[in-house]
Every structure is written in structure tokens, then in C-alpha cells.
Length: 334
Image (cartoon, rainbow, N blue to C red):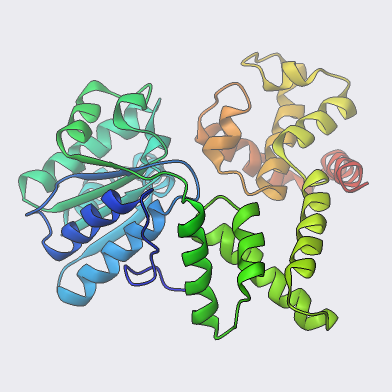
């Protein structure tokens, strides 16, 4: 489903943020600049960012609209520094008429990234270009964040999004059912909405799974079937491969403690096990590089990326590395 204002279910939890995002889309730079949308995962921040981008591209066809995640900005910066391409990097972002950056909280604790972003921010703001950001936290809670960057965020409008209430979740499900041309029984919608407290993506995943299960099993599309599917999902979640499970499996394999693996300690005996664990976290979970780094002593995303690439390069050429990965994977799947 496209992320538009039309298919964004509005409720008391997100009404203010929706109104602010729509105002920015309709009158860029004239309403709120910068606009910061903030809230936990699954509350609709990314949906609104895409909705703004689509609206502006439809009504200002010659404008350059740039949407990206903060990690993408950090990867671009790293490559620009490594290949001495900083002028091209800065020019690329400064040419934007509208810049939308998701997960800006990932920049916290990365002074070089913040400095580069500040230069882009100030250049666009001075040129009266629209800036829209999304974060998991309010500006004053983003730590460690450079004072200058925090002051830029606070100077604009900050719009919070809370987890959608039951009525909003039901409205989201009704929208998604209509988009798929499926008749959603009210009792099934209520079971889903009572189990899932997040916004569109999580609700859509559960809805799609129940519809698929009903189609393949031939069972009635009712609340009993929905409850069965949620029982299955709960059982799967209990056995899901997570960062903590990987850390535990790797620590056991190498006979070290999980606390040592997660620590900031740099002893040689911990380097290889930690690299293995980071690689597997990157391979087997959906955690971002930044989130993985946080669970390994607060390491930077570049450290995680380096560790993962190191193991990836050696898996096919080093029998020991291949054996370790094979055996740890087997333990995780057991």
C-alpha cells in the first residue's frame, strides 16, 4: 500500500502530527520548518514522511525531493570521506528542495555525522528549503546530540505521535481490507486490533497472514481462526532469533560470558567471537547496524559494518570461520 495522506488513519494519538505534516506538504517552508515527527516504532512517522514526499512531488513536479534514512546519510558520508569526495557529497544534499530524513536519532553520539548534517541543514534552511525529520525521541531526549543540532530541531515544530488507540487501529484495518477488496468481519478486526498496538505495517502483516491462512486452510474467516493464527505467532516469537539469542549462542560456543561479549573491552580473545556475533546479528535479524552496535557496548554502526564485512569476506576462504558459522547457525536453529 502506498504511503499517502488518504490512507493514513487519523485519531487522537496522531491528529496533531498529521495536521502539521499536511500543512508542510501543502505549503512547504511557509508552515513549519523544520518539522520533526517523533514517537516510538510503528506509530506512523515513516508513513507521514512518505506522504509529504508524494504530495510535494505531485504538486511541484520540478522540485528535487530527497528522502533517506539517517543510516544512509552516514554511509554516504563515510564513502565521501574515504574517497575524498566531500564537495560532491555536500552538493548532492544541498541541491534538495525538500529533505526528509528518517531515524535522525541514529546520529546521536556521532559528532562527525552531526557536523556534516549541520552544514547541509544550515545551507538548506538559509536557502528557504523544507526540512522534515523523524525521530524515535523528542529533541531534548536525543543524547548525546550536539547542542547546535538540538537547537535547530527545537527551533522548529516538534509533533509527537503516540501508539494508535483501538478505534484508530480498527480504522487502519478497515482501510487495508478495502484496499485489498476483502470483507473483514468486525469480530476478526477486533481480535487483530486487540493483539497489535502499533500502526499500519504491523497491523497489515497480521491481517495478511490471517487472510492467507483462511484461504489455504479453507477454514471460516472468523475470530476463532484469528485467535489460532495469533497463538502460532506467539509460539514463533518465542523461538525467534534475536540479538540476545545470538550473543548467548556465540558466548557459549567460545566459552566466554555474554557480558564480556557485550562489553566495551577490546581483549584479543573477544575480538573474533564479537565479530562472529555481529555478523550473525546482521544476517539473521532485522536489527539496524546502529541497534546492533548499541547491544555490543554502544559501538558505532561503522564498527558493526566492518566486523560483518570482515567475516563475510573470510567465510568462503577460511575453513575455521565457515565451521564456526555453520555450527552456531545450527545451534540457533535447533
